[in-house]
Length: 117
Length: 114
Image 1 (spheres, chains in turn purple, orange):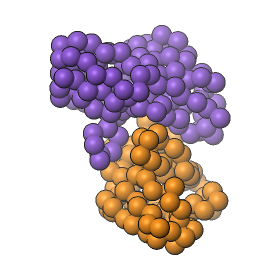
Image 2 (image 1 turned 120 degrees about the vertical axis):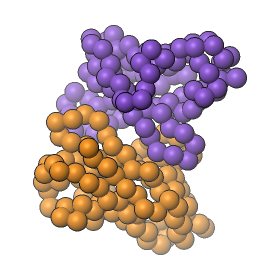
Image 3 (image 1 turned 30 degrees about the vertical axis):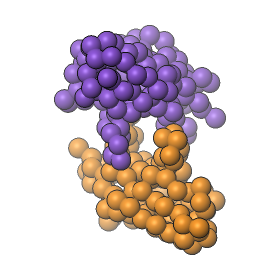
Image 4 (image 1 turned 90 degrees about the vertical axis):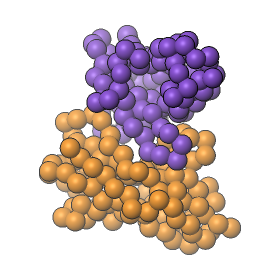
């Protein structure tokens, strides 16, 4: 089945530094990937939709200059948290849908726990 | 815009018993897709079951089945013969056919007790 690999699983960084999170589709091509943020005991909130070869679409309230998304190939999307601050600490999850569409549903990465100290 | 509501923040069930998780949604679309996802303590999101709105027959996957009531905009998940490994957060999700994004409900935390 479709597999999405997300790295790193955990990262601790100092306030003011930048962190890059990678999301790879291992056995399928994904023209679109999605980035979610999940606070403890809460649901997944869509941050942005990552489109291969074009600019990402950000949800209202998400700062595009702070959360940089690059989708340079059909199998890789990256989320960079720039100038991270403690309030950016959260669980970030990516997902992708295989090009063949609904039959695969969505596949999720295993998530990245970001802690900014 | 679509909204998805899960009215049960927490539920518990005895092992081997049956439990039903509720989900309602609001949309003006006629065709769409509905999903139930499971998120165990590992935080990995796992697809449990999916339903196409144009299909009247309720989806079933082994011990998991749904009760899809389109007119009532209700999409409940029934877990039969509950197992300890079913302990997890369960999220109901909605997707328009033309759109790509999933809209999630707030989640229900299910605890299966031995």
